[in-house]
Length: 220
Image (cartoon, rainbow, N blue to C red):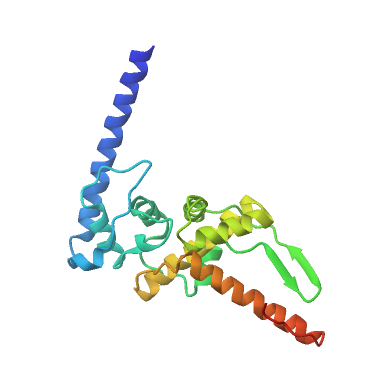
């Protein structure tokens, strides 16, 4: 039984290898007319922990196809981009705005509020692109070095994992859209800056509340 399982696994690996080589040929055909990428534009290559494709120079080809190092976005590596090519492509012109792109991915918030009325809108499940962004968000949950990871942990404690992963996926999708439309590499702001922004926002709200009730906020 063990020998049969091993033989089946080897056969499976051979088929995966064949598919990887076919994908590599398709990618080479797609980038053949693309300009060469300068070494300083490649950035750092992120490791792929699971299902790493056996494709030589995958990172270089991803930068050539997208025109910018999209893997600079937290949660996204070259394998993520390889999956996204089949879902979103590299041209965002069919999405006039970031809001339309996140809506197409089914990552828009399901909560609408108008005045004192508040209601939840039932939305369709995420398409494949949306699911990829959610998986990317989930991979950041335990990361202590990026702002999106801190955002996900904070929201998960308040609203639960489903809402947190969807909201985190939306932030990654927004960064993906901005990177492709603006052609500028994503810059990670880090947890410290995120916490500073959060503290400043909370202080601003507290000051407004205090002013409303004719009170004053005093630092200790």
